[in-house]
Length: 140
Image (tube, rainbow, N blue to C red; front, side):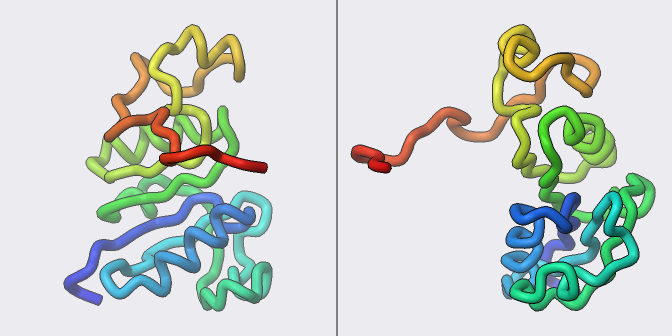
């Protein structure tokens, strides 16, 4: 797809990453360029998560390989995501981080809850309202 945005999904072997990869793969505007995994690298995503129907091999994370995309979805746990987000942003990649690493603007509050932050410098500005709630009451 020459007209669409190329997207990498880091952490596609986990549930959130697999669903993200499936949504990107099926989207008419996006080209799913890379799916990564740590221990499952080399396996096919549709073998690991058949429901996704994404026929791509999971790659090990390498910013020099997956850093040449228009956008990336980082689906790693908090603490692990920050260095990858920083590496991608240095390369001009637009990043959606599903972890807690950039959810809080105050580094001290982050470290109170999660421990040391893995990215150097101040927290990255988020786009939009990071703590927005859905309208109306939320039930269980």
